[in-house]
Amino acid sequence: MNLNNQENIKKNSRPPKKEPSPMEVRQRERFVGKSARVAAKYLRRLTELKGAPQAMKPFFQVLEDIHVNMKNVEQPTDTKIVGTYCVMVPQELIYAAGAQPVKLCSGSYSAFAIGDDLVPRDACPLVKSVMGFQAMGVMPVYEDCSLMVVPITCDCKKKMAGMLAERVPTYSLHVPTSKSDDDDMEQVVSEFYQLIPALEAVTGQAITCDSLARSIDGMGFAQYQMSQFAAYKKHVPALIQGTHAMALMNAFSYMPVDRFSEQLHRLNQELGRRQKEKQFVSMDKQPRIMVTGSPIIFPNIKIPLLIEEMGGILVGDETCMGERALYDPTVVVDQSFDGLLRSLANRYTRPCTCPTFVDNSQRIYRIKQMIADHQVQGVVYHVLRGCLVYDFEYQTLEEELGQLGIPVIRVESDYNEEDIEQLRIRIEAFIELIKLKDLAIKKQKQEKANE
Image (cartoon, rainbow, N blue to C red; front, side):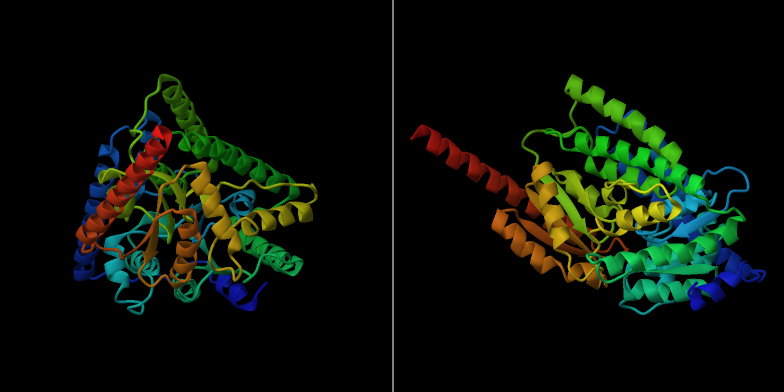
């Protein structure tokens, strides 16, 4: 095991907490109240979007429990919780160790304001928000984690891992800069092997070939249900609002995989009925928008809300909080323990379109594929302020999509509400541009038909 990780894991309990002063108690109460109010407001806007399927209610309830009611995740008694900060953390290994993974990337405005005083000004808001929650010590889903696993995908994540290690046992999962060579895969396999004893130490349960195979099967069913859901999302006119689909994936961060799969199966059944009965949530003329770039994390869902409140329909989500977490299944060709681990290494690295990798032509290919599959008419490229890895790729994507005649707009945002009106104006203008372009195309087709 990496020496730094080994020493961090030895801190198998959080530092003893000091009794808070009356002033600190009041500060925490104000923080909890403000954080809950903001989350409740965005959850209300989310549920007020027309056409929410009945099967979405459990997903909405999960977001309310975590962010509004400040409850912990639902899990069996005595099950350890392992916090993760990226889709490249192998959840199958966590389940195989008998623990419950939760994805703790945060979109909280209130926690961001606290974290702004803890990390450099130009650090990304996601890191500021995570550290804000850690500093306040009030959110159960953070406080009850026995271990944090942080993939080192950017400089901010690297420094965040160091800061977290001062407060809670933290494992740094190193990600290769390339994913095309066999040596890259060997590095990932080695990292997974080193992660195993850290997980086993947390739960006291050994990861065996059988337990790993069962967890791969469990995740496989969720991936199958997600593939069905993605097929329904391609329908024209749309069967579900894209913001609701993003809420579903945010809820997945806190749900046991079997419960998530079961509820997603019910949602797919409802969408199937909608398709047969022609119950749509959009009209043919609504511009079909795709969002990509930096993650969109509840309650910071202002951009998808604005897209659909301004008359667009969000049909594609190529972000690490979207379908990317589940769209590619684990393919097992060797049933041995080493074979299963290598299958996981391939699943979590080869298809991943994170810009942390040097050669990321695969990301452009994937976005083009989604544009074709979902009949996308425009792309919103979301950049969190300070998120350089995604910002670097905007120009390349703009050039590639320009060749396809697909308009793209770059929108930069932070974890606050100060930029909402500016974003509203730009997104509304972008949607109107797509409408005008669509009208021009139809007019040209009509003129050709009349010749």
